[in-house]
Amino acid sequence: MTVPATDADRKLWEEAGVRLDLDGELATVTLCNPKRRNAQSPAMWRALAAIGRTLDGTVRVVLLRAEGVSFSAGLDRAMFTPEGIPGERTFMELAAAADQELDAAIAEYQEAFTWWRRPDVVSIAAVQGHAVGAGFQLALGCDLRVVAEDVQFAMKETSLGLVPDLAGTKPLIELVGYARALEICATGRWVGAEESVATGLANLSVPVEELEGAARDLAAALLAAPRNAVIETKALLQGAGGRSYDEQRSAERQAQARRLRDLAGIGD
Image (cartoon, rainbow, N blue to C red; front, side, top):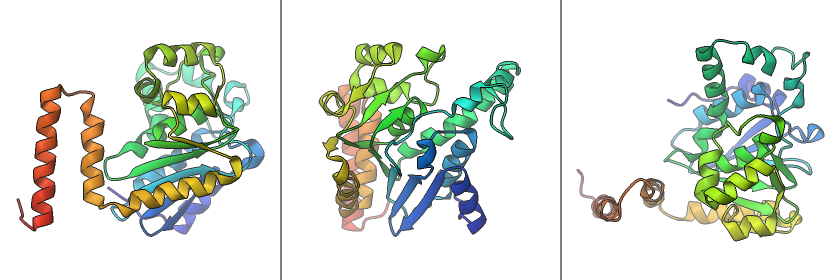
């Protein structure tokens, strides 16, 4: 269910470091706290999840971008301190919660990272500078990634004694394979633009000054294709990993039958 955003919603989201701009079929979500290198907090995650709930069937493409030199430096480290972030539970307080309560809290955080791959939109992350931990996983939440030549991905959770828990492990393995994903996560090392493109982590690398234009060019190309054909194709590709070869051929036939009948004006 979609709920239209109010001016009060938008103000609250910007206070949490996120801005939403709508232009017809394109939605642009901007991380807008460059002074903090777009460090993430539970308030930002709630804002991102809420934005996902507001997007209706008008939107076809979502562009995720960030202001400043870094896409996102990851989790606000104040969450690890006794003082924490005003109004939020610290990680130590979460650790002391009952199993069901702790699981529900992490599930709520994950919502900010999961809606980007929903079937009715295609999402693009335009990533520059550092994308660390939660920042890396937010970029992984999108369908496609365009990166600047200065990009530096890193999964630092293991270095902090934690695991990546914001829905990033499955897309990372799907993109780069198990062995490389394990090595990236367990070592916390930096992954630059050249390796990102070579391993399939990123679709395209461009100079920093060309990042915005390249991402918007990709959005325009996606919008140029018929919407229902893109939706059907995305569903076919997303489901391919869980199907056998023959099951995938069958899914292709069924999808094509729907497309042919739609184009011919023949109802179900």
